[in-house]
Image 1 (cartoon, rainbow, N blue to C red):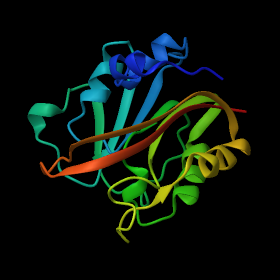
Image 2 (cartoon, one colour):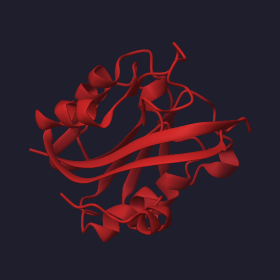
Image 3 (cartoon, rainbow, N blue to C red):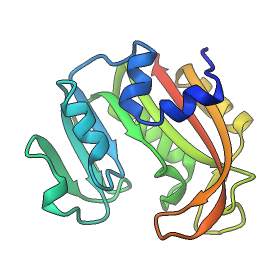
Image 4 (cartoon, rainbow, N blue to C red):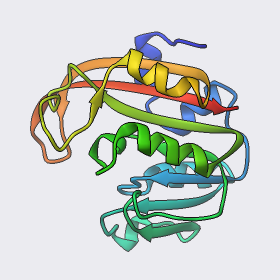
Length: 182
């Protein structure tokens, strides 16, 4: 397992940059769950990947690169026989209508053997900890959940005060992991 210092984490916030640094940028097909503005997908296209992106919200066509296969759908409803080399689920699992464990199991099913999963969840010191619409966890619970799936290649736990997408200020407690499927 590899841990990076805090100053590295700030530099490596983009999933594609972190996976490059860890020598895990392999394969051909990426799924970006909760694509938001498709910037992560564009980063992967620039690295030669084919990108499928899903989000519950419409994304302005100006943000969708012509090479991104975008579908407006919830993760819970998303279904495909395709297996992915890399799946990115950054800041999306806490907001699903299913549990983090159920979402994680579904992500694992979508990933090919030795595929790479980059995901984040909110910890129990997050400002949304008591919000019934947001699923939170702690580092030990996340590690335990990952055990049945594969090997943790990277993990970080960040604490800071910052803005939400709506502009509100809150305490953030973000647990990020990169896992390689068995």
